[in-house]
Image (cartoon, rainbow, N blue to C red; front, side, top):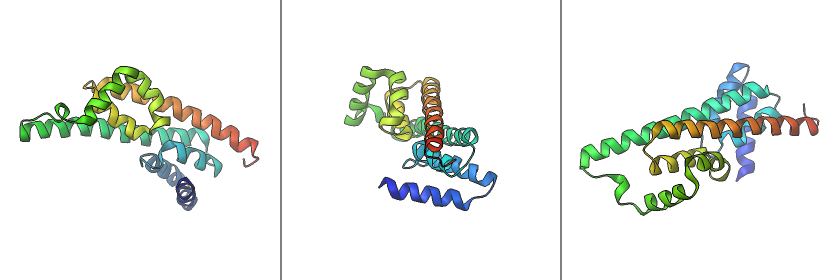
Length: 165
């Protein structure tokens, strides 16, 4: 499953030119199955600038996370106005998410979630367990920034050690 994703990302990036390649990194980082964990190593392996790649991937993922967090809030508010019910009161999934939340907190989720479940699923888990949009966006951005920087460093070192650069 991962190998076809790597090939597709590589082929897509190879077909781009100039700044268009970094726009593709931005867009590919928004896709849940790809995220920065796939696009950064592939892009750096293809010779794209590591710093520009990291910035583009971070911006793409942060944009997707922001859309999830803001979109969820608006969807819940719309549903409450339309039906007069609160989505968060009745679901078993919300109960499970809240138990995880109590155990690890937002900071733990933001730092471990991207590597364990992906940033998109982490963002969904965060919005179903907390109403503090600012804190969610802040912590998820910090966690995403840390993982993006780590991926850039590890990918750059790996490409260098393999003699691909």
